[in-house]
Image 1 (cartoon, rainbow, N blue to C red):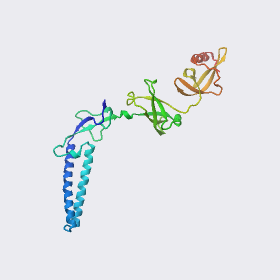
Image 2: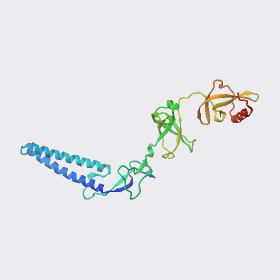
Image 3: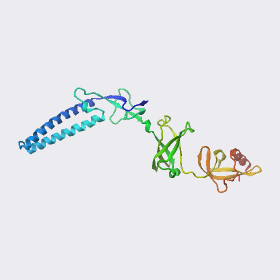
Amino acid sequence: MHVQKGQVLAIIEDMQYIQLQQDYLTAKELFNVAEMEYTRQKELNAKKASSDKLFEQISAERETQRIATASLKQKLDLLGVNVSRLTSANINKSISIVSPVSGLVSKVNINVGKYVAPTEMLFELTDMSDVVLTFNAFEKDVQYLKTGQALDVYSNDNPEKKYTAKIQFINQSLNADRAAVITAKLDRYDAVFIPGLFVNANIHIKNKKQLALPEAAIVDWQGKSYVFEDKGNGNYAMTVVKTGIAQDDFKQFESETITTSSKLVVKNAYSLLMKAMNSGEEK
């Protein structure tokens, strides 16, 4: 569910909360007493009416109580207890766990009546206004990436709908899949981006002219990729090519013999492959 910053997520009760508040109020009173005694002994010492050793002991006691009070205050601050309003009349046995952000509760690890350890995670919250996207970039593509680069992001369910994002961080170490983890942030958040959603991204790099054909025009056979060149009079030649990036149903390729003036088959290439294999006419 969605929650707002400061909204109560749970209420926890424990005897230790009472003890902490008691210890703080006691330490605060002891410090006040030590402070008054320090002031009195300071005046007496100035008049040489008390020894320096006694004044040093009183000073040390005062500082000890100051440290104890400050330490307990920090502990209560962590629990959300306002010590400026804490008195013996309003010691509470429970504390409220409030949401530190406005966002989505993605996990709840507790239930009513359960005992929770100090190190236990009670809730997992996602700040939906600051969603981070992570991608795997393969080793050969990392060289084209840089911080601040624009991305077109889309989900697997709706690849036609594109969202813009920018690269925030590039991990320079490759993982076990020989890929680098890329962190990106959306230019504008959309509710479609829920925690755990699988997304893809297209990278904006410098334009480079390359030969390309519809993916269906390039066929694979025995570990190689081929295109068919129209030689005229119903004759077609199979030409080995080296394929590259595929995008928007087109695939980039390289060839030493094919140029922009070559006449290539763009439809029914697979049928031509089957015909060539059946007749043994591969060239």
